[in-house]
Length: 322
Image (cartoon, rainbow, N blue to C red):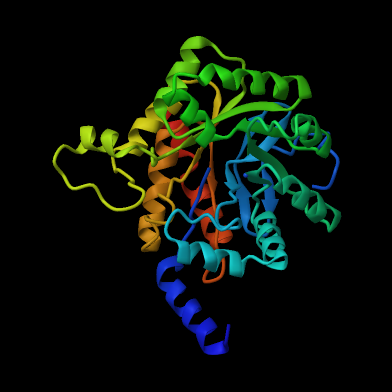
């Protein structure tokens, strides 16, 4: 790619990605033996924390979709993200997250190997993961547990597909393996109905990863909701979805980690819009819940900005419970 083309891509991407903290949806070889202190003091201030079994997570967790080139916006943005996130830039983002008080990275299956490499380079972030049954690697859960992963959640895309097929019970075998491995047991979903089902059945798990938007509805499902309103092209993010998911979050005592609270970057047109999304989320989840936010720091200090918003609005959760 020549210089002019590269500059054009960066200028174009700036308009799309400018303030993006797109969600989503993922250290070095030894488990953290002791819980982190209730609050982590950094040069940026104090970031609130929540309990996670014997561990402590910052209420703001850095997600993985931008790092892995999964923007949920367009193929162009995916490529721009993959172009930006060299190994050096990934490590730089995670180190900046650590500086502002974020103590946990969430990603998907294979990234635990990258996390171990970064731990060998001095990174101290904890790691939680989404994955699902892999017939080609039946020992993957045990391998991740040995690597020091704190929690494993059944992958939300697989969870929801099984639920729609009436086969969600198949996920319980995976969750049993996670329990036997001795790490925190999680279930990821984009659907409030999944949380309601699992709560009613009394499954053995510790936490949910709960997407603010049910973004994968079929055209038939959208038609039932929208009537004769034309269905937009691409993924559809409905304003009514976050209140629905937050209601499900509040109805379980288990810890919930809300993700895609910025609608995969669609709510990043201005700092005010980003702040409103953080404010709404913290005002409508429980004090023992957190948020997972993907970050793309090429154009602004998103770790610092998001940490400041977490400190600003985190107390709203306690007020909402009263």
